[in-house]
Length: 213
Ligand code: URA
Image (cartoon, rainbow, N blue to C red; front, top):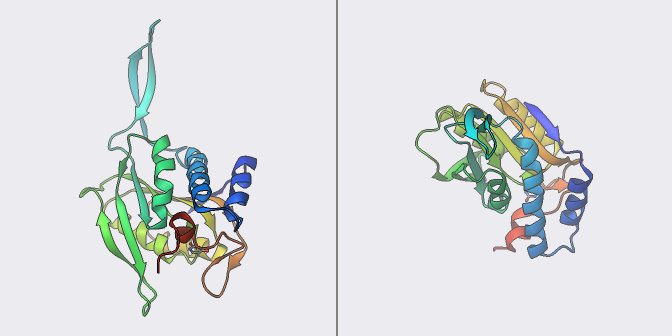
């Protein structure tokens, strides 16, 4: 797995405000949105393109456009939704699919409870959005699910990651034989005993949308 940890003062600046417990939900949503657009710029460095001939007002020339099939953006419900607008701002012609993943309390395995994806993922380049790479179980299951349905190139975009999640994602995707890339705003220290990233930013879903009991 390729890993890209953002190294940019603007990203670090926005992440600092995002981490701050005093930041309210509207500000948190706006900053998450802005951060995703910055991360998406790096994450789409290898988006597939094809040549196109055009005519400028002055002369014919050649350029590039996004190749078909278009990339697929997949936010993981619920917190991944807070990253969708920031991503499609950069890739407005991408298709969007949705995956709801939940962890079974007994087996601790993540499974899919909602799936709105195109039927045919054959040779699709996919961008998976999940703000927090914590244990890595959910993201690894999502990547495997997409690859089993035909996706052949996966980039996960996470605002924050823990070393434990990064290691698990790497281990659980190495036998897939498709390129998997992680682009993250920062690699934090560790997970705590409740599975929260330290220092992290708390529960991303709650901070985006408020606490739901
Ligand atoms: N999910 C979150 O929202 N926050 C964490 O710190 C870990 C998982």
